[in-house]
Length: 437
Image (cartoon, rainbow, N blue to C red; front, top):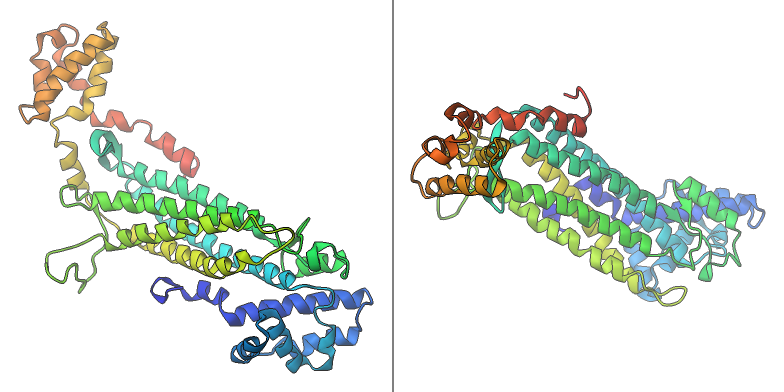
């Protein structure tokens, strides 16, 4: 985790202190369940909670023990025994390290996902507000980067809202996918621990029992989880890229907020660069990169190996922390985005009315001209305009083949900008619900 791209609440989930606290809770709940089953003394389970509930686990001490044992869970259990005393011998009865490690990882992922879902909710609120603000702000739609037909800026933001609403649904599904618990012992057979212990621990930790854990929770779950984070990151990049293009000097329809005292370049004092959305593009690449090793973790040897462990120690914190930061940053960008309707109108007018070419084409076909001939007539008049040689409407009204089918007034009617926006409310209703706003 890089502090520059980290936020405290998400970072805290992955701290050693949090990890050891979760380990303790897993072990203590398991000991309580064993006591209820009569496997260990109830007094021992009570003692574990009494001494450990408010204990501050010494990270340095655990690290010191691990340097000798070369085993992190054993190091923790040794330190726990120093805190609890003799009754600690009843902790970890019938369990294996993966029971603790895998269950803990899933608890952390669930907590991280709750933060990510809240991040998306904040982004959706910002997108909704700005979409309604510019619901009917005319702008040019582009295909292949070239002027196509008119849209509204609100529709651009409504599209992003719909996409991030899907991201939220995916995160909810990903949370459910990894919210499982394994307390099944060596090779996952429950030979030395009752399945009811797993059920109890899962309930206490807000998880569900893993149907077949084979000592480790199957990593197809985690592959799906990190792939989902990659998809969300790709949606971030999509919107960031749109803003970057709109901020180009030749376009300048929207721009990242530029604060008082901000500097854009060490060499050129005039610069106002889209640094935040460029940063988001880079962060999205990193989050996507974590999906591949998660998929490669699926193929473990037999019932268990630890080739996945080193991968997850890195991608668990890094992917969630980075995505959390990126979502928050994008929310800030959208919330403060500078939008220039005058520039949008200027760009709409830049091609001398060519954006209405399809409507003229359709009007000609409806007037009895074959589609092939209609296309030829419209394109013949469009190409001079493309070269800067006149206005599209005037050229069409001066073309005898066109006016043989359409009156000058009928041609002019095809240049009504509002025609393109007659279904904006329908689209907004689909995205935000009827009578939204």
